[in-house]
Image 1 (cartoon, rainbow, N blue to C red):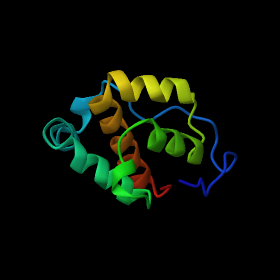
Image 2 (image 1 turned 60 degrees about the vertical axis):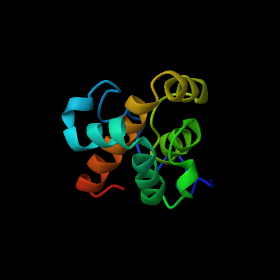
Image 3 (image 1 turned 180 degrees about the vertical axis):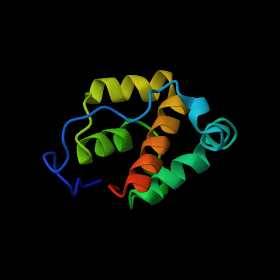
Length: 104
């Protein structure tokens, strides 16, 4: 998983939604709850990665680095370990927002 866009292209920021903002997008929330691996595959596809890397801390860390989002690998690992559905939904919501803004 090579990071193509290095930090600096984007100003340092936070994720555009909170990890617990699942109700902001019910479709993503339901997909995460009932078809978690499918949601992971769409994230991987969005990022041009292999489907098996769509969930977990690795894809989250690559995304954070690509878009200069504040955080750490330790935090990514903990979020993916203890809140896998919520953190994956957060990532998909952020991708959706960036697509709408034309920055993805």
